[in-house]
Length: 71
Image (tube, rainbow, N blue to C red; front, side):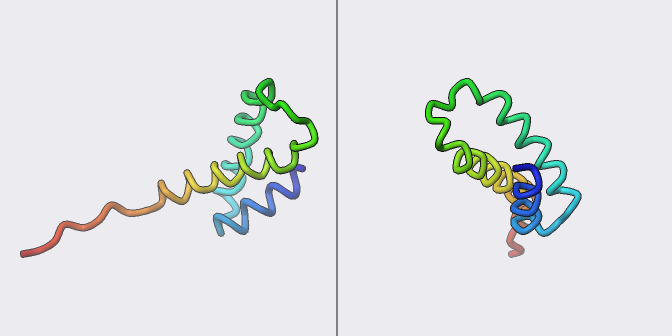
């Protein structure tokens, strides 16, 4: 799944360096949450959901704070 998740994150983040960092975080999240996976048949969807959530966190952190309105 590593190569496919890398591709997925690169497409979502449009930055290969951030995608690699996010991929490492995804695998840490998977390792931590693996005991809570109840249906092994849902592994693929579960992995992509974790990757999507991680990508959204990265995208949210990219946003610049709103500029104050000038009077």
